[in-house]
Image (tube, one colour):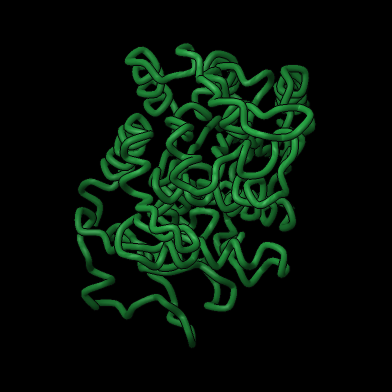
Length: 379
């Protein structure tokens, strides 16, 4: 088991307390910030409850293994599901000299980039000097909106990881992957506050303002089904997730009519089966409300040594331009469950999203159950 030193101001409970000794199947609840990372951790039994912060002291006692000699880790970033917090944590591993992080993969990822990553890793892994020293390459890659909004993550990246595992394990190289999902109501609300609200508030014009984007969270969300799962799968009209929901007149900006989503953009039973395979293939999956459990499991698998972090995208870490939107999101997150207001329009986020994103709810539950099964029997 792990233990942590209790520092002044730390959220780590004392050994023997009910919170420290909580069984794995009885987690505490947690609220989330705008990026999805929890403000109060919910941890399985063998871990203390902690929002790992340098202000709370060292996390060294939480490590279970040493830094690997050779490693390639791929994180699948889905929008507004704690991915920015993960990115900052990865940046820290780089700053401490443990890993190399390839941020070119954040946006506009192209196949050529991935091929270069694989070649670079292979070449470094077989370098005689590295083999002799036992210190091969250690690379982290973030995959987001991969080339052409296709299914490249499952068909190319995951395939290549399987091949690398088969061909490079004998060199001591560890190949791994991870992915986070978020409660759909919270993820929709966060996506809306971050990307959509400001479009609605622009003056009327071509593809801007209320005429193009709708006048509320509910109006926008009801026209964008299964936001999270479609992005994760990659090939279900992902660019449409951030496009206006109405057509407007090019000359006047007046609304012409509703944009119809093509049937090929909608999630099918076959797509669910695809996602089940992805979740089974990815080494570490988790939900944002159980972020600390995800992060500690990831550290166990990959060998990350520096576990302290500070949540990103919180309202006090941004300028005034975004503060109002962050405060609106915080108000939503503080309400009971996933419900939240929409700046006074009375929308019930949970009800709206339940109607428009049943496949997101299914996918989130699959990831949640998969993560929970990882901790089954832990003590």
